Image (cartoon, rainbow, N blue to C red):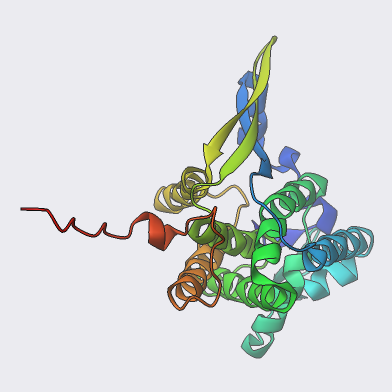
Length: 276
């Protein structure tokens, strides 16, 4: 989720990388970019629900880009009436609308880069979890986690926000529970002035997901504010992890012969009968 400032000229301008001079300067000096693009998971069913979510996110985000009123409405934003050069907006004061807004705002994005990044992550991790959870289970999981992520963000920041990343972090949490040892294929890009390098490598899912969550916790700890809804990420991951862990414990969703869940990974080994 991308946290929105209170004063906005147009929704399409709220999350572009040019909005953050410090980031722009960092990119000018040099940068390393890590992009997960594939997971080593056998899919037992076609993830039609995830395909539908991806399509809806694209359509609603483009609609929001083209119509400011649609953007503000779905993001749960209302004018303060202060006027001025910039239209002053805030998160709606109707708390009863927050659960609905938390879901509707998850289908909006603040810019093309924001949209593209979330689409990629949802494609990589969502297809695997849709296949594992089934269609009904996955859509209920995704939408409920989007709501909880948004509510966490609203309650802890008081600011509006847009983006699917809160729900995506819940999906990544489920991936951590059910596919901790499955490889995630990652492309890396490094550039420093005229030096450019790129390549790819594989890393077990447990390390990839934990790294992203630790990064968000560090950003919260240091109070980093660059328009990223870190609390929404944590607010999606925590309940997503809890629900997925419960499903694994109750064996509602079970691994195949070639898979090992997080519970199995850390389960104590039985002592040998010959142990003295």
